[in-house]
Amino acid sequence: MSARVTIRDVAARAGVSAGAVSLALNDRPGLSAATRERIRAAAADLGWIPSQAARSLGGRAERTDTVGLVIARPARQLGLEPFFMEFISGIESTLEERAATLLLRLVRDREEEITVHRQWWKARRVSGCVLVDLTEADPRVPALAQQGMPVIAAGHSGLAGHEVTAVWTDDGAAIEEAVRYLALLGHRRIARVGGDPALGHTRIRARALERIAAELGLEEPRSLATDFSGQAGARATRMLLASGDRRPTAIIYDNDIMAVASLAVAAEFGLLVPRDLSLIAWDDSQLCRLTHPTLSAMSHDVHGFGAQVARRLFDLVDRRPTSSGPAATPVLVPRGSTAPARAQ
Image: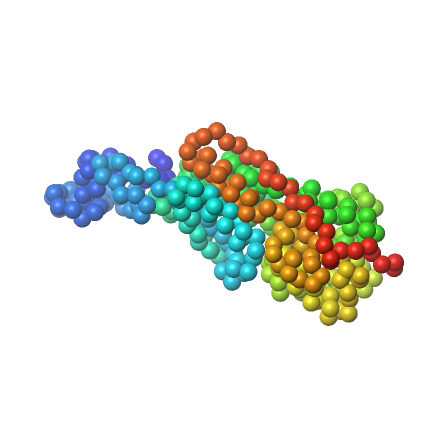
């Protein structure tokens, strides 16, 4: 039986019509007490959950155009993260075209996220969902595939696997462009301040950095993990700048917030950006153009990425032909935070 229990399933279990189930579960008159109790017992046995997005009568249900998005991040951190604000606005732009809505929930971990998605699907609160922050062998993919729910993954297909349609950016190619640019400026010691090492895009970027640095004959790069917050980015920058002879002359950050925070850390060490230290941010939000100096960045149309993810999801919901595919690759936008490396 499908994990998404319907009124017809309850009716079959209780040996009554779907209309009788609707009367019993909506506390309407017309049934004997014994029949009403039998129907409720059948619903409890099957784990039926009332639909908040549609009400059924005689087995006919109205469709809901609601997209679910569950994010395992602290609320305070998410509110400060330009990427997610732009990504969600991109999703909303597509939802607006269909008069659809977004159902957003913040949770503590992946297990809770899976539980929320299952509850939404069983209760018919969503027509499909978006997965973000993919990991290798992500447990959410097979768990939600079993539900029969339309799912789109905002992450590389190599992480998502064949069980789910995916849209992604080529983070490896973006890292390669950034490193080649810094190497042309004479930088030999390049570091990276990244996010959670369990996240798929974090691993892709770290591996790409190691590969291209070795190919160009640069010193072995260092990648430090953070939670993407400005505070964690500042701490990682202090560790890098306090490493003596191993101090990098250029640092690539996995988001804009951490790159902005690093400007103050460089000043703490008496370093001038970009004379003594070059910095490259990621995503290229408005923050990059409001700092002094302005931040060079790997520019990414995050709004367009969110819109593309939502459009692909509705292809699945409407059962139109669709497939996994890449979004535009981030491109380097040089600004005032990068310059030729000083002679050592």
